Amino acid sequence: MKIAWFCIPAHGHTNPTLGLVKEMTAAGHEIYYFTFEQFRAKLEAAGAHVILCDGYDFEMEDKENADRVGKDMAFATELLVSSTLALDAMVAEKVREISPDLIVSDSVAYWGKLTAMKYGIPYVSSTTTFAFNEQSSRYMKQGIGSLIKMIFSMPKINKQLRRLQDKGYPVKNILEIVKNDNATNTIVYTSKYFQPCSDSFSDKYHFVGPSIRPVQQPFEKTAEKTVYISLGTVVKNPAFYQNAIQAFRDTPYQVILSLGESACTFTDLPDNIQVYAHVDQMAVLSIADVFITHCGMNSASEGLYFEVPLVLYPQTPEQGAVAKRTAELSAGVLLQSADPDSIRKAVEEVLQNDSYKKAASQISDSFKKSGGIAEARAFLESITR
Picture 1 (cartoon, rainbow, N blue to C red):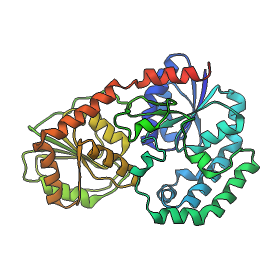
Picture 2 (cartoon, rainbow, N blue to C red; picture 1 turned 90 degrees about the vertical axis):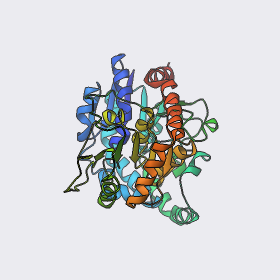
Picture 3 (cartoon, helix red, strand yellow; picture 1 turned 135 degrees about the horizontal axis):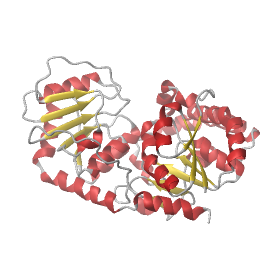
Picture 4 (tube, one colour; picture 1 turned 90 degrees about the horizontal axis):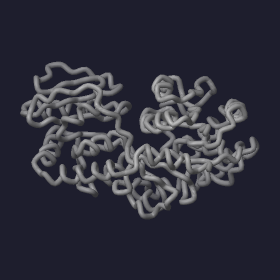
């Protein structure tokens, strides 16, 4: 089987697919992965044929644009349409050349779904966040102001959709593009237990659990309790890191702080606090007793997989949904304030109350009992039979 796979330029959306890509290519299927240069090496290592989308005036690559997308539906639609049309000629040529049996695309790589619609190719959504429908979307904080903005932006949205229609994309409205329904074949990289409102999704949705890679190099545990702190690869919050260092300066804990792309520098660090630009997160989580996290879906899932309770510090609506579900299942504590005293008290609440660890273990068990990449592979193989 030949599969054309589309993804946005983001580690958090690419990494969960690597295990499935490797599983599929090992079984003899051909994966043609439309992606960007920074992801080429890891995808080729998984066995994919990489098709680069760099250099096509692809506006979704712009970080400032990405920040605005979640706040402005009209702008998001314009960006989606412009990016789709920027890739249109190249994708058309590759579709003719490859003649794929199936298209898989990230749930927000809408140009993949549009390509499937345009050429009548079977389609699967690859969902690296929670699956969102009318019920589960209540976990995303969207106020009445957001709804009013969207209503007033509809004329602009419809103008953008006409650009797609003029290029042969049979799309009637924006919801047809951005919303999955119970008729859409969908792979979700979490368990039914962790997924909010999981009973509201049809059997077209396969909850296969998170994609967890093995520990590459063990991390040394130097204290009875280990606190791991990471706000992901993108979020830059030097004040939070400074407060965390202050919170744990005079404690017996081993504190491991991963800065990601933050350019923060620290001096006069106490011996119990280790600061790194990057760590092998799996290795650290395998020894951690509590994880202070921004609640990115991958990070939260990895922590819970290793049965580590979380201190929840979400930065976006999507992360807020992950935080809300984790707290709802009693596997973490929501950080109400980012001052040193609040950070320390939240960590101590988690460390001193075994119920958080037990709840995290229950979620971990649900992950491990999900079908994993073997079920995902069987699902993809069944679609074109």
